[in-house]
Length: 271
Ligand code: KIV
Ligand code: NA
Image (tube, rainbow, N blue to C red; front, side):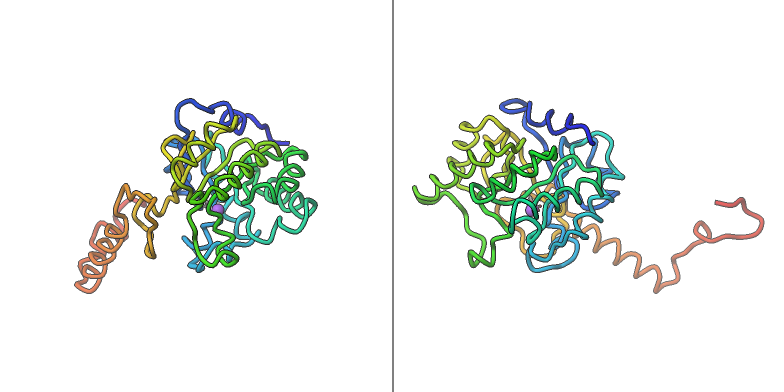
């Protein structure tokens, strides 16, 4: 069995220095991010970001495991969490545990994540009870996009706030080591953070959360479709990739690439 040291270290940071999280889906990105972050999430956003699906409902168990294995090969110290895809845990605690086990055993990741509050408490308890650490995810739940008819920010009404608090407490009670709060009014995310003993990780939530997460392609400006309001782009890789492709195309067409530096001749050493 894997050690729970990494998830326990995250749990222990409640109220302390903010926990830095990003998504990662591939080996090179895991290698590049790992020195700078505490936690990498192999999010089911991979279905949209890397595979071009319309929403996260396109993610599958095989997709999550394949990307999880790639990320794990690039990580030495970070805590790696893998999303449970839609359809892999909603049916019953038994289904949820079987899916979590498969992800955990086939990737050697440190934890799994699923979306839901009080309605998923028995699934969470089954997974944690079997010794698999779990991160919760409440507020805007992208896997519910079809059920809800779009992406709706949470916490706008008293009823919604009461439900969010209830859901947060249920996830904590069920044994989660941390909780993602997505797309939730700022004061409500701050209140949930104050009321829980486990760290909250915000996205479109509050600077008061115990940590923050962004989708890596959003953070580096590589997202080609709509970029949500809560995203900050820290680089402009769309432009860098387009510029590189344009220069390469021009040089190939002009026979300016390859040059003598990039071809092999008999008298030169191998390289
Ligand atoms: O799938 C994902 O990328 C996520 C994060 C945005 C929290 O669930
Ligand atoms: Na997700």
